[in-house]
Image 1 (tube, helix red, strand yellow):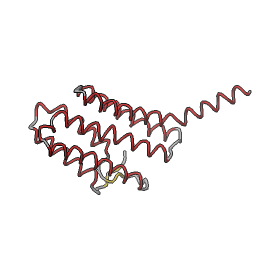
Image 2 (image 1 turned 45 degrees about the horizontal axis):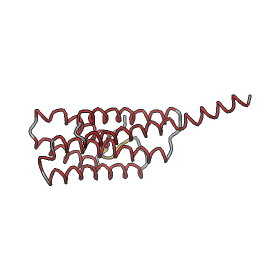
Image 3 (image 1 turned 90 degrees about the horizontal axis):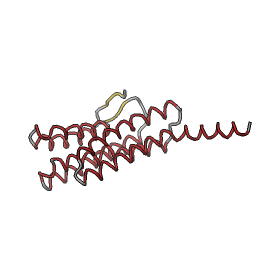
Image 4 (image 1 turned 45 degrees about the vertical axis):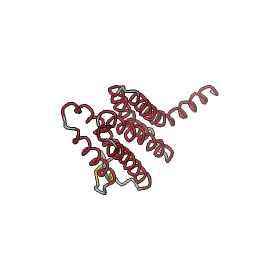
Length: 179
């Protein structure tokens, strides 16, 4: 009987941490994407960002399914998202093309990251009402990452425009229904 209680408590504790483990997986993949991107392995960086997006998708689903949503989980998710969908995609695009613009390329790479951080902070202090205000950083980060694939086929100015546009969309006040 005692053994079954211990096993049951252990399973409950593991279940409670499942979403956080997925969130930390997202964070780790984003951090790894940054490191390999800085070392020049941009294709691997791209792949790691997309795997991080999968982990990010599942952490919220798991938290809702097991009814383990928490303020800690929400904050941890945002900190992970700024790494995986803010810093990692921005550096990927910087390494891939934006470096060609010199100081403006650096400025708008950092500007994108700042807008993403602002977007996440605003999300964390607002009530959940079924809508996002502004473009979610996960969507912006995936678009930036996807754009890397068309660098050989598009003029460099396209990417400069894209990172500026996505930055402003993240901090804009338009409403987007959650799906």
